[in-house]
Length: 161
Image (cartoon, rainbow, N blue to C red):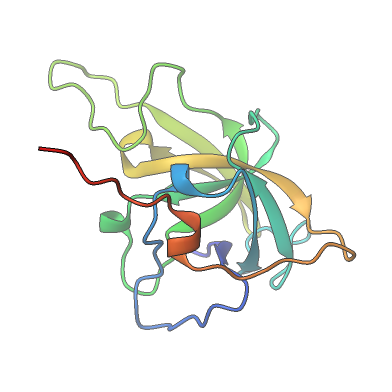
């Protein structure tokens, strides 16, 4: 299935490996940029477009969003982060990355759509790490910088005995 995926600017993309992030989406900067790869969002988003995303801004149906899939569920050659248009957000009580309660028959989902070909897709909330809102293309006059995971993720604190 075609996907429009994103990667950090300047990052080489090996086709034979899983494309995953070593940091959790909750540790991403409040606003960050990534480059789109793929054509499933044509004609609205083209391959090579640098998009801005907000970790903190609320998303609503109709917004473009980035879905972060759990790394252990990403098949070789696929991307962990994919861009889609949000149709139905997760239920307010659903928790990302958490399997449903064993006594529950409800499997909360997120419904998104792509445009090329036009199709709606459902993703289980338990298979996602998070969703961030797309703020649109990075303006031409805005510079972006490649940073390492160490620069993004807060340092781990040592516990005192």
